[in-house]
Amino acid sequence: MDHGPASDWSKDKASNFKTRIGIWMFMLYAIIYLGFILINTINPSLMASDIGGLNLAIIYGFGLIIFALMLAFVYNAICSAAEEELNGTIPDLGEEKE
View 1 (cartoon, rainbow, N blue to C red):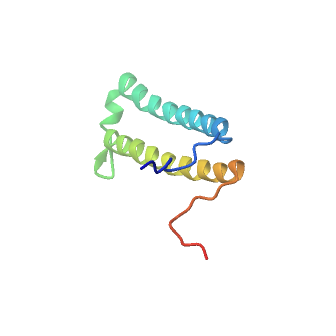
View 2 (view 1 turned 90 degrees about the vertical axis):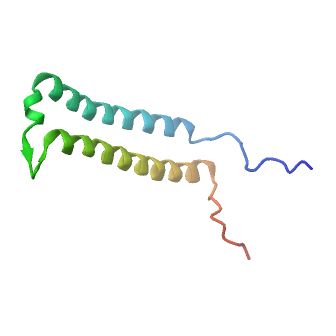
View 3 (view 1 turned 180 degrees about the vertical axis):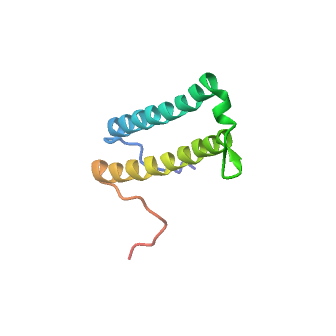
């Protein structure tokens, strides 16, 4: 009862592109996170300053989380488009072919 592979695992021609995009996005996030760390170590009282009823530490921290999620969605969109273009595949979204 061998059903075969669930999907085609051929060579991914978009692999190098996806790696470069991932590294650049990681570096961007790391720089922004480094800003958070530097503010906390150099001038921690700045993080206690109020902005709209919340302190800067809370706003910056939630901003980091939201930014990471945004990067993930952008990375997925860019990489999916690159896979379709470079591999010549269009993902099957469960639509029936006529």
